[in-house]
Image 1: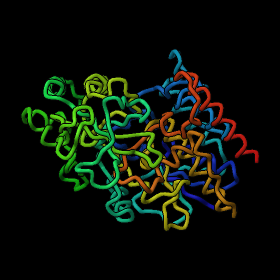
Image 2 (image 1 turned 180 degrees about the vertical axis):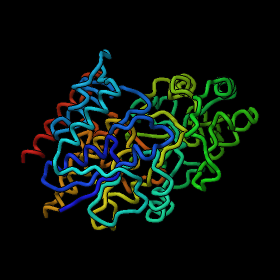
Image 3 (image 1 turned 180 degrees about the horizontal axis):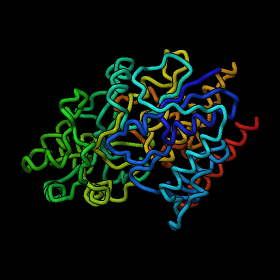
Image 4 (image 1 turned 45 degrees about the vertical axis):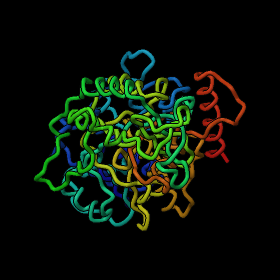
Length: 437
């Protein structure tokens, strides 16, 4: 049986190899070298555009744990990365050209993988994994939009996300405005002096430069920046602008004073477990270091752990919680899967990991088996659960982080590095049990 994998990036190569190892004939479609996206320049597979780092190597880090899980599933990306690694302290970094060449060599070495060069402009109806990335070509993106409806974003305007356990609740408090409904929001109140100091830092903070391909193209008809103005741009309209916008304090009462605060930052649940919260209305294009500095001025967030900083750039991704299941399969399809950043996973390693999950699941289905459900205690399982969490209403892409893993049982008190080591030990034990059971 022949299956299609569209895109020979990190996810596409992983999916293709997983399927080829199971004996399927794979048609791997790649539009390079006939056509390049605005960001890609090299003709090899799995081209790394923004950085040559695959993040931390140690297993007690989020991405290190994910890489170890992928190794146990036969990751071709990690095989190539370890052969082409360059010194990078505690990180796994690669020589970009050698890495791309090695991935290309390993993938092309499979006799049952046929590489077909040229742009794909039609949406497949079955036996396929779509791994076309955050810069999916306009023609295919339009076809994806026809299938996914409004569930396709072309520009990622996202707010920062922090872990719930890092919020200081001696200052922050749960409440909804006017106490309507359940107290689902965390509120960080400010007095007048705190607000004015925060405002001055916000308007003076340095923004990240936009690349040409990150700028909206009105002529394409694919721009979705509406309602996504960066908070620092809004702030520059005047000192009261954000206090009457995303920081309005109406309907809130600070339990410490019994009065309405001068301003307030609200945080909303990012996942149903309530381990992650996003800063409502704080989509931003500030540099990451500036976000850490300025947003840590918010009362209650002085020591907040940011698992995702705000971004504003070209990033084609679908509304996965509505459209995909835990195996990255399009709901309602016969067996069409997505993989890579188009699913809302964020980062090189995470993209590759999603390709492994999708490729394995498609192989299982074609063999008449039930696809493997990775435990949520593993990073693979937690990412799969995150992108398919139907309780999420304002989906933002996410990379691997310890905040998406289930918390340890109550009563276990550990230092951060000790806790992460326990998370990793639990994850790998549960993964081995799943694979060997």
